[in-house]
Image 1 (cartoon, rainbow, N blue to C red):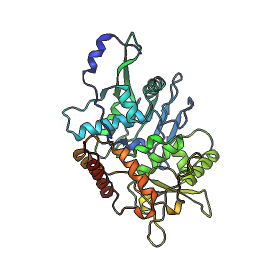
Image 2: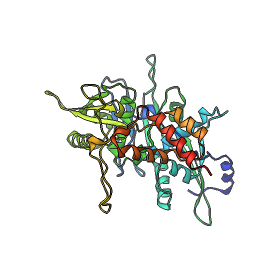
Image 3: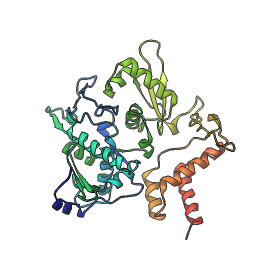
Amino acid sequence: MSQPSDLAKQFDLFVPFIADMPLRDQRETMERPFFSLSKNKRLKPIEYTSPDKTVYVNVFPNQEFGMATIWDADVLIWAASILCELKKKRANEIPRTLHFQPYDLLKTIRRDSGGRQYKLLRESLARLQATTIRTNIRADKARRKERQFGWIESFTDVIDEKTKASKGMSITLSDWFYEGVMMDGGVLAIDPAYFGIKGGRERWLYRVARKHAGGAGEEGFVIGLPTLFEKSGAEGDYRRFKFEIIRVARADEIPGIHLRIEEREQGEPQLRMIRRELVTDAEGAVSYQPPAKRTPAKSKKAVVASPSDLPLFKRELSDDVLRRIRQNFAGWDVYALKAEFDAWLFERADRAPKNYDAAFYGFVKQHAARNQS
């Protein structure tokens, strides 16, 4: 939407782009059915009530724009991460309105920056504003409290009249979302690999698993597939959902989380979610191995180990090691180095480190020393 030129004054203070910014997701949105899991336009509302009848979430699409999708939620992850970064830096004021360059947002959520992506970003913002959510989450026992909101109150896109290119955007977050990010314990760290997950069900399953299994022990978190179906808000019937979840669990490619389908003598199957580094065999030894990567057809020299030969490695870096690396080795692309380090680990099974963070820090230190200008 084109805006009067005097609005350009609002963009004096852009949110700065922060390379390798720790990513945060709003905790309450991770397990309830707040988003469409399909890229197709959804006009069917989501009407969810928890099994104990204490919590409900209703999501109403807009007839023109449809319902906000789980891919649109990437914008909210970016916004939550920005707010947390400002909070960590003890900013005097942490605003609900964020001014930014579209290129910076797209780069953070691992998307291309071509003209089509700008168009898709504007469509995402339209759905985030137009979708209406009604829920009693955060209601206390003393009184009933219902909130109705859109994910963002408004957005602005300042467009150059000559080039038709965006000169900058702004979004104003809803009170509900802003409050959820700012409250103690309101966010969880997520793996940047999340943005590479293609399927809607897989993305939703990562967020559920990250919330429930992230803080669980070796037993992980287990949930029946019928309950999981209700929590997803997915369109279609349970039979189709069950088929898809079993397929996803067998592929077992969700970042940082091992998935296991458990059949029961009576009743429907269950899904168990366990942090990958905690998966052990009966004798207490690490038993999970990441799936082998396919060798490109043209590469005859490449040798791919079998899954049993591949070492376990932790996918998430702790906030402490990220802080130390950024402080001591400023300017390096942490996640590019992490990918190089993980590839090195994959080459030999005996390279699995006892302490991933310490080993990776040493790797970065050596890399920086070798490449000093």
